[in-house]
Length: 180
Image (tube, helix red, strand yellow):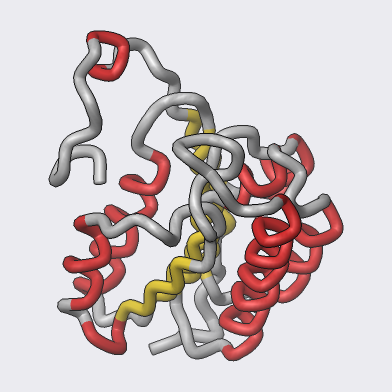
Protein backbone atom coordinates (compact mmCIF):
# COMPACT_ATOMS: atom_id res chain seq x y z
CA UNK A 1 0.00 0.00 0.00
CA UNK A 2 1.15 3.52 -0.66
CA UNK A 3 2.78 5.42 2.17
CA UNK A 4 2.35 9.21 1.87
CA UNK A 5 5.22 9.77 4.34
CA UNK A 6 7.74 7.84 2.24
CA UNK A 7 10.04 9.79 -0.08
CA UNK A 8 9.73 8.30 -3.53
CA UNK A 9 12.88 8.07 -5.59
CA UNK A 10 13.47 8.81 -9.25
CA UNK A 11 15.75 6.05 -10.53
CA UNK A 12 17.28 5.99 -14.03
CA UNK A 13 18.87 2.96 -15.68
CA UNK A 14 20.58 4.01 -18.91
CA UNK A 15 23.58 3.23 -21.10
CA UNK A 16 24.44 1.08 -24.09
CA UNK A 17 24.75 -2.20 -22.19
CA UNK A 18 22.11 -4.84 -21.52
CA UNK A 19 20.28 -5.03 -18.25
CA UNK A 20 18.29 -1.81 -17.84
CA UNK A 21 14.85 -3.41 -17.94
CA UNK A 22 16.21 -6.38 -16.01
CA UNK A 23 17.44 -4.06 -13.23
CA UNK A 24 14.03 -2.37 -13.10
CA UNK A 25 12.34 -5.77 -12.87
CA UNK A 26 14.70 -6.81 -10.10
CA UNK A 27 13.62 -3.76 -8.12
CA UNK A 28 9.99 -4.53 -8.93
CA UNK A 29 10.28 -8.09 -7.66
CA UNK A 30 11.94 -6.82 -4.49
CA UNK A 31 9.07 -4.36 -4.01
CA UNK A 32 6.49 -7.11 -4.59
CA UNK A 33 8.11 -9.02 -1.74
CA UNK A 34 7.02 -6.16 0.54
CA UNK A 35 3.48 -6.23 -0.79
CA UNK A 36 3.87 -3.13 -2.95
CA UNK A 37 1.76 -2.51 -6.02
CA UNK A 38 3.81 -2.08 -9.21
CA UNK A 39 2.97 -0.85 -12.71
CA UNK A 40 5.26 -1.09 -15.73
CA UNK A 41 4.49 0.78 -18.95
CA UNK A 42 6.64 -0.24 -21.90
CA UNK A 43 7.27 2.39 -24.57
CA UNK A 44 9.04 0.36 -27.27
CA UNK A 45 8.47 -3.30 -26.59
CA UNK A 46 5.01 -4.58 -27.17
CA UNK A 47 4.70 -6.93 -30.11
CA UNK A 48 7.06 -9.64 -28.90
CA UNK A 49 6.21 -12.29 -26.32
CA UNK A 50 8.87 -12.52 -23.65
CA UNK A 51 9.43 -14.29 -20.34
CA UNK A 52 8.77 -11.24 -18.17
CA UNK A 53 5.15 -11.26 -19.32
CA UNK A 54 4.63 -14.76 -17.92
CA UNK A 55 6.37 -13.99 -14.64
CA UNK A 56 4.49 -10.74 -14.12
CA UNK A 57 1.13 -12.40 -14.84
CA UNK A 58 1.69 -14.66 -11.82
CA UNK A 59 1.38 -11.61 -9.54
CA UNK A 60 -2.13 -10.76 -10.72
CA UNK A 61 -3.30 -7.27 -9.85
CA UNK A 62 -0.23 -6.60 -7.69
CA UNK A 63 1.91 -6.09 -10.84
CA UNK A 64 0.41 -4.50 -13.94
CA UNK A 65 2.22 -4.63 -17.28
CA UNK A 66 1.20 -2.41 -20.19
CA UNK A 67 3.25 -3.15 -23.35
CA UNK A 68 2.15 -0.16 -25.44
CA UNK A 69 4.94 -0.03 -27.99
CA UNK A 70 4.33 -1.31 -31.51
CA UNK A 71 7.78 -2.85 -31.84
CA UNK A 72 11.31 -1.66 -32.20
CA UNK A 73 11.36 1.57 -34.18
CA UNK A 74 13.23 1.35 -37.52
CA UNK A 75 14.91 -1.96 -36.62
CA UNK A 76 14.09 -5.66 -36.47
CA UNK A 77 11.62 -5.75 -39.35
CA UNK A 78 9.73 -2.62 -38.30
CA UNK A 79 6.90 -2.17 -40.79
CA UNK A 80 4.91 0.44 -38.87
CA UNK A 81 4.70 4.07 -40.04
CA UNK A 82 6.47 6.59 -37.84
CA UNK A 83 3.13 8.16 -36.86
CA UNK A 84 1.95 4.84 -35.39
CA UNK A 85 5.08 4.74 -33.20
CA UNK A 86 4.52 8.39 -32.15
CA UNK A 87 0.90 7.72 -31.21
CA UNK A 88 1.89 4.65 -29.19
CA UNK A 89 4.56 6.65 -27.34
CA UNK A 90 2.07 9.47 -26.62
CA UNK A 91 -0.40 6.92 -25.22
CA UNK A 92 2.34 5.47 -23.05
CA UNK A 93 3.19 8.94 -21.67
CA UNK A 94 -0.47 9.53 -20.85
CA UNK A 95 -0.78 6.13 -19.16
CA UNK A 96 2.32 6.67 -17.01
CA UNK A 97 0.87 10.01 -15.91
CA UNK A 98 -2.50 8.41 -15.20
CA UNK A 99 -0.91 5.65 -13.11
CA UNK A 100 1.23 8.14 -11.17
CA UNK A 101 -1.67 10.49 -10.49
CA UNK A 102 -3.89 7.62 -9.33
CA UNK A 103 -1.52 7.13 -6.35
CA UNK A 104 -2.53 3.44 -6.39
CA UNK A 105 1.04 2.26 -7.00
CA UNK A 106 4.16 2.24 -4.91
CA UNK A 107 6.41 1.86 -7.93
CA UNK A 108 5.86 2.87 -11.55
CA UNK A 109 8.32 1.85 -14.27
CA UNK A 110 8.54 3.77 -17.54
CA UNK A 111 10.42 1.13 -19.52
CA UNK A 112 12.33 2.44 -22.56
CA UNK A 113 11.10 6.01 -21.97
CA UNK A 114 14.64 7.28 -22.60
CA UNK A 115 14.74 5.42 -25.91
CA UNK A 116 11.44 6.98 -26.99
CA UNK A 117 13.01 10.36 -26.22
CA UNK A 118 16.36 9.53 -27.83
CA UNK A 119 14.75 8.47 -31.12
CA UNK A 120 12.45 11.52 -30.98
CA UNK A 121 9.11 9.76 -30.61
CA UNK A 122 8.49 12.07 -27.64
CA UNK A 123 10.05 15.36 -26.60
CA UNK A 124 11.33 16.79 -23.33
CA UNK A 125 7.87 18.22 -22.56
CA UNK A 126 6.52 14.67 -22.29
CA UNK A 127 9.18 13.67 -19.78
CA UNK A 128 8.65 16.85 -17.77
CA UNK A 129 4.90 16.10 -17.65
CA UNK A 130 5.68 12.66 -16.21
CA UNK A 131 8.07 14.07 -13.61
CA UNK A 132 5.58 16.73 -12.56
CA UNK A 133 2.77 14.16 -12.23
CA UNK A 134 4.68 11.97 -9.77
CA UNK A 135 3.50 12.27 -6.19
CA UNK A 136 6.45 12.63 -3.83
CA UNK A 137 5.86 9.24 -2.18
CA UNK A 138 5.82 7.14 -5.37
CA UNK A 139 9.01 5.63 -6.76
CA UNK A 140 9.56 6.04 -10.51
CA UNK A 141 12.06 4.05 -12.55
CA UNK A 142 12.95 5.19 -16.07
CA UNK A 143 14.90 2.84 -18.32
CA UNK A 144 16.50 3.09 -21.74
CA UNK A 145 19.67 4.14 -23.46
CA UNK A 146 20.13 7.81 -24.21
CA UNK A 147 18.67 9.30 -21.02
CA UNK A 148 18.66 13.08 -21.41
CA UNK A 149 20.89 15.15 -19.15
CA UNK A 150 17.94 16.94 -17.52
CA UNK A 151 16.50 13.56 -16.45
CA UNK A 152 19.86 12.43 -15.09
CA UNK A 153 20.16 15.66 -13.09
CA UNK A 154 16.63 15.28 -11.68
CA UNK A 155 17.19 11.66 -10.64
CA UNK A 156 18.04 10.46 -7.16
CA UNK A 157 19.94 7.48 -8.54
CA UNK A 158 21.40 6.83 -11.99
CA UNK A 159 23.08 3.64 -13.13
CA UNK A 160 24.73 3.42 -16.51
CA UNK A 161 25.03 -0.02 -18.08
CA UNK A 162 28.09 -0.18 -20.33
CA UNK A 163 28.52 -2.93 -22.87
CA UNK A 164 31.88 -4.63 -22.67
CA UNK A 165 31.09 -7.88 -24.44
CA UNK A 166 27.87 -9.30 -25.90
CA UNK A 167 27.05 -12.76 -27.32
CA UNK A 168 25.60 -11.13 -30.45
CA UNK A 169 29.12 -9.99 -31.35
CA UNK A 170 30.02 -13.69 -31.54
CA UNK A 171 27.01 -14.52 -33.73
CA UNK A 172 24.93 -15.88 -30.86
CA UNK A 173 21.28 -14.89 -31.24
CA UNK A 174 19.02 -13.73 -28.40
CA UNK A 175 17.90 -16.63 -26.21
CA UNK A 176 14.65 -17.10 -24.29
CA UNK A 177 15.15 -16.95 -20.55
CA UNK A 178 18.29 -14.86 -20.89
CA UNK A 179 17.51 -12.12 -23.41
CA UNK A 180 13.72 -12.15 -23.49
